[in-house]
Image (cartoon, rainbow, N blue to C red; front, side, top):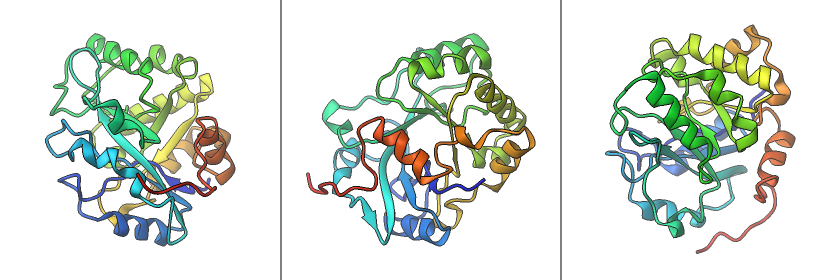
Length: 247
């Protein structure tokens, strides 16, 4: 399977990341990618940028050195009810792709029931496109209950390559989540969660896991330009047509 876009990356405005926007795009180009989503943490995360960062993302050109740039965010799921980082609506106008993820700094791990309820709230949140790194074993939840609702709620699921190596128990959980996505025909995005340019597009572990379980390529939205384009066109976002780049 081929991945043509990395839909979860962080620039150095996220405090524990190390590369600028230009460097991350350079990393995407070096990896042979057609597109990259910049998805820094939300503003109420301790290492997230001010919300003005997101309000001003329409300044980012659609194409940089031949790589398409998607303006995104990684929302933090907030405890206990499953909210997201508070931001003014005007600050979200430029956001084109939004993940929502558990991070312990804003959602201390709790019970399976609490995690499931929080994820169900995210299912119905209109600002969120995708669940980020769901395989984190610290946040056990009712996988089938959540995954079977994703299509009805217009949500996709990220398969996070970084989780496989840094979050204990994630590989087994990610495989089970992927099996459920296959069962319910829920689209997924395979992403690196890169925090430095040299990791952009590195998703070999995630692809190997998907191959082991026979996951269908047609459900991976970033496995071809046609699939990625179709996904964003369904949301009235044109990745490969000229758009204005000023505020």
